Amino acid sequence: MKIMKFMNRIPGGLVIVPMVAVSVIFATFFPGFMKLGGFTSALFSSDSTSFVIAVLLFISGVQFDLHDFVPAMKRGGALTLGRLLIGILCEWLVLHFFGPDGFLGISALSIVIAMTSCNPGVYLSVCQESGDKLDIPGFGVMNLLPVPAVPILMLGAASGAPFDGMSLLVTIIPFLLGIFFGNIDKGCRDVFGGATPVFLIFLGVTCGATLDWKDMFSQVPQGILLSVLYFAITIPLQLVVDRFVLKRPGYGAVSMSSISGVSIIMPAAVAAVLPAYQQYTASAVAQLGLAVILTDLFSPVLIKLALQKWGGAEEREESYEQIV
Image (cartoon, rainbow, N blue to C red; front, side, top):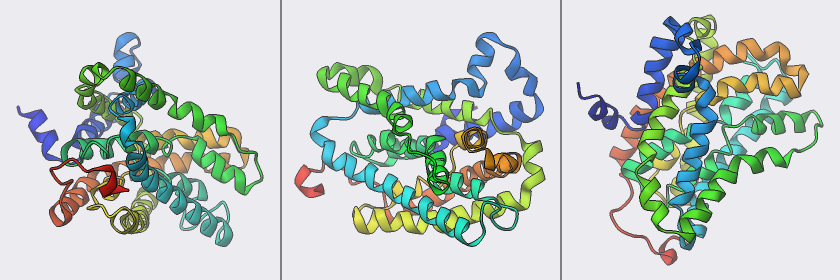
């Protein structure tokens, strides 16, 4: 069996293939397997998700040369800011016209979490295959998106809750540590550079462990509609940022077109801080779970089309002057 060849043929496949496989085989049909305890649960469960993401943040930071700080942050920062602005716009429109209940069975909680989310692992996987060295650090910045702090801050601001900057700071510390060690000792890049694909695979495993198809079937229409809205709103607006603001081919924007599996835990996290959203938690988890699967299944097709139409990064070292 040529499993690795199959995964490498799919854009972002190092994350998407194991995520779907684990969600279908283990999380749905053999959920008890992940609760055996010990090292088994540590490997095949969602408990390790934060650790895997933290390691990937550290690795992407190690590969970040400070000489490329401005152009690299320009890319990752612009795409991340673009997604945040999309989320803020969607939040305002939904709350202003429909309130917390949202519309057609999709609550404001589901919409805000979905529209601000992306799967940085898919982005990193695509950039490993078709990008250049300045794309990789964008992974560190994008990991500010799929964390509970973002929807909590956005929905909390709408209800008058105070801003919690510490939640964002602790998210990016592993990335900053990676930058520090990678720049004081270039040898760290040789040691950690080749580890990215391994941790991308296990990121897919841990995210897949949170998905349960049985629960998602209860919200099929809403989950499909949420996925369609996600693609229809985020991709065109992100392409505007990538192609017309950054003057890039567009693969970076399209590779952000899938919802992170971590999003499934966010409704409960938001409800813990903002009790008014507790009533929407169960439906939001099911809707987001289905949207994660659907967006991760269809995003490779969209990424492949984007690469065929506009191509990947040029095979050359771009200078600071060319980018800035």
